[in-house]
Each structure stands twice: as C-alpha cells, then as structure tokens.
Image (cartoon, rainbow, N blue to C red; front, side, top):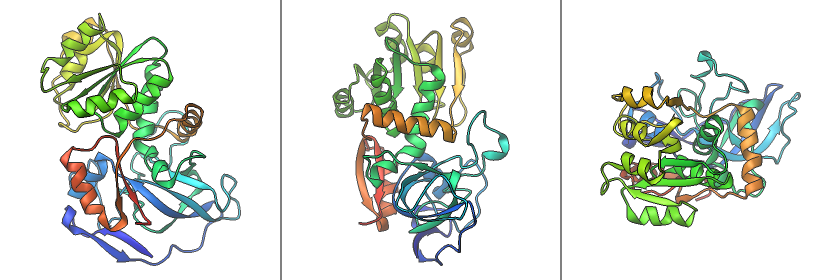
Length: 336
C-alpha cells in the first residue's frame, strides 16, 4: 500500500513508502479507501516540527481526508460498503463539551494521517460526506468547514447581523458562505485586491485591504456604526487587538487561528467596556459535523478550492500553502 511518510521533520523529508495493508477489522471498525485530502495550517506545523503536541516519527501526515468504505466490521451500524465518507478530526468527541483526554487523538499527528491508500478506523471516526460532493470537495470539510460552522453556531450569528472574517483561507471562506446562507452581512479582510474581489463574488458585502488600511479595526467599527456582531479571528497575535476594536458591544470574537503567533497583548479596556465574549474554537464534535453536512446540502454550498495537487506532489502543495497565495482550500487528488 502506498503512503506518504515523514521520517524527520521538514518538508524535504516527506517520502513515498510502501506499507502493509491494515489488518483485519475489529467488530466496530471500518476499512476505507482514501481518495483525496486537503491541507490545513496545523499540517504545516506538524511537518515542520513546530506542532503544539508531541509527535512521534515516522508519521503519516495530513488530518483531513475523504473516500469510500471498502468493508465494515461485524457490529458496525453507521456505514456500509460503498458509502462516501470524510474523517472526523476529533475522533473521540461525539457530542457535548470536549474533554482534555480527547484532544490528543487527531489524525495527521499524533495519530497517523490520511496520506495512504487504505486505513482501518473506528466507525465513529468517520462522517458521511455530502451527497453531491466529490472526494476532493468532501476532503475540505473536517477542519476548515467545521471550524467555521461551529464558530457561527456558538456565536449565534443570525439574519441581519454582521460577520467580520479575517483573510481568505478555507475557514474564512466557509464562514462567509455559511453567514450569507443565514442572511448576515459579511466583511472580509485581505492584503490582496484580487482576493477581495473574488470574495465579493461569493457574497461578501465589504472588503478591506488591511495593508492599505492599517487601522482596519476602527474602519470596521465605523462601517458598521458600532462594530461587527461576530469576528472570526484567524490571525492571532498580530490581529487580535484590532479584532477587539472591530467587535460590537456584547459581540463575540471567535478565536480560531494563530498564524501570526501564539501570544497576544489583549486590550483589556475594549474587552471590559464592550463586554466582549472571547470564544476559543477548535473544530466541533461528531453531532455538529453531521448537522453541518445537512446544512451544506440544504444551502447547496460548494467548497472554494484554489488548487488540486497529485498524491506525489504533497511537498509542492505545502510550499504553495506556505506562500500564502491561495484563495480557499488546497487539495490533494490521490488519482493524480
């Protein structure tokens, strides 16, 4: 069975290997064929050796994958052969509040990831893919779409409210699409006028170039006459102070990313006087993933995929992710 494996940290250490086919199934296990994957920032951290959890090498990378069921264990009830599936990022989190001991069970580090032809997984580590989606489309959902979905659910974004989403990566564009389906106004930031224009074709109402408008938090506050109801904060250290300025009184800042650093100075005056709700978002449980799939189907939302690479082009895909030129998701098609 072919797989991509990380022998030592660093993109240049990704190598194609031939591994044994996974063994026979347990009663609650499912054998799947992976057909596609998609990249997230956390995958880059894992491969580069900057991950936030201890990792053991060698490691099969990449958390998000999609494919089809080949075989089911004797007591499996959720799937049958031929069903289309995606991975579930927090594979032990089925519902309710998260527990600390569930946090380390994640595909693509510390657990083996999806860059392999086949895997044997517990039936609750998988989710039904949207009916009309290709494997490449479905592979974009487990982290990016679910993070965006859960942020808006937790913030209770609804018709007539305003969302500010930072950047035009996968999470931000899913949030834009989910928010428009709810009847909300959406403001998007980017350093690229081209990306802002593309975001408007997806329904964004306002685009702000944060390189030209370095005080974009104040601009959002003024544009909305009092601030955005919800801010989807993807930047982290550098952008959080301005997100706190951009949010409305009693609004929510949903912290879902940290691409500019793990430690930030928090403007306490804004937090206290506005009574801001700072909400940490790290995907969601199985029950929310299943609700999201139904919402995607009902609203006919299609993932925004920038580029699709082949199985043996994983390093090039990571280099493209590092460049920051992408608009939406970067995917891997295992048939290429």
